[in-house]
Image (cartoon, rainbow, N blue to C red; front, side, top):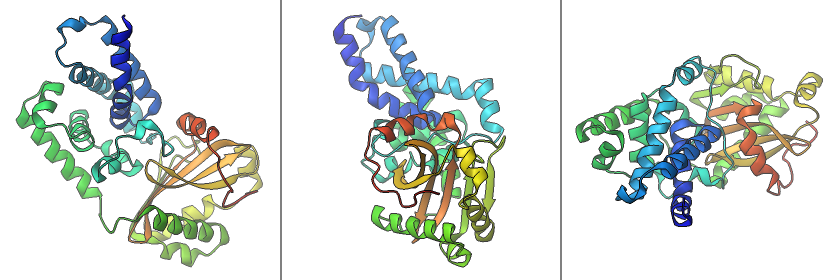
Length: 312
């Protein structure tokens, strides 16, 4: 392959990776899909490709759909043991993030909701909401009619909207303050304050420190508060499991405030929060080692600053 063709592919690699991540919810799988797209590009008769960007988008999207439809992926995802892979803000795989729809499409809350869509609905939703493709363009990418694209988009938006209770969107500084209060309440035994910081429809989802076979889901302020209090209570057994005393840092993960747990400079867990109207509306706890590799790599390249809690 000549260098011009390689350069042409590399110029669009970031966009393809961002698309694949939104479709698959996994950075590792997204990178594999992009690499497979490159191999197809390498083997293609490129002189016959009129619009390379459209061709690459079509190939990458359909490779992702093949993965979503595979028997193994269906088993893993429907078994209820799967959460999206969290990414530290600044990761290029999170782009684009110019509009509210683009930023929302990559939050853990929405990526989790997208698991309830069919692969086709998910693809149309991502292409339309995150990348602003027209229905005519989406139809060409997915080999469906424009009418089918519109129907998939309508069903996807309806299903996502049914689970999303929009309120006053918190700016990053306000959301951080809410999470700071939440963390202080969770680690101090102030259960009443913890309950007061949760919305009436709060949800908590966790992979059980990476040990549970199925995701742990909690609803109602009281149940979530009890789960959080237990999770943030330090014990010798938890420190042994984590590999030592933890330092907890505030960060942003997938565009939302998060607490990142670190042992010896290594990320061992993350809790991402969705803040609405000054309260926590949802939280996602991820500690499975395989889901934290890319976040940990990004963490090593940054100055973590002073932890909000040290020696946990």
